[in-house]
Length: 75
Image (cartoon, rainbow, N blue to C red; front, side):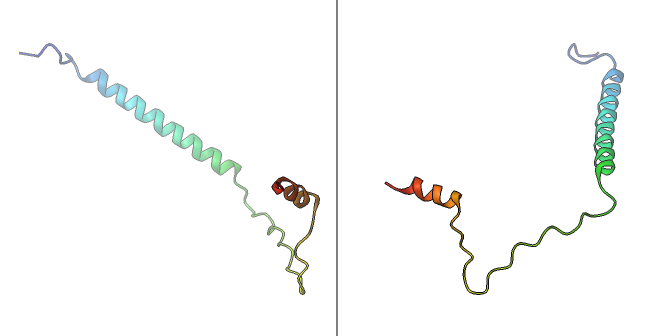
C-alpha cells in the first residue's frame, strides 16, 4: 500500500535533478571559458617601480592635498 504523501513515480524528480545538475555544469563551463578568453597570453610589463627614497631626507612634500588635510585638523 502506497502512502498518500509519496509521489507515484520518482522519475520526474530524477529528471529535474539531472536538468539542474546540467545547468550548473553549463554555467561553470561558461564562466571558465570567459575567464580563459579574457586572460592574456603574455604578462604585462612590470609595473612602474616606486620612486626611490631620497638620499638625505626630502621624502616629505607639502602638497595642496596635505595642506588641505592640515586645515581640516585645526580647531
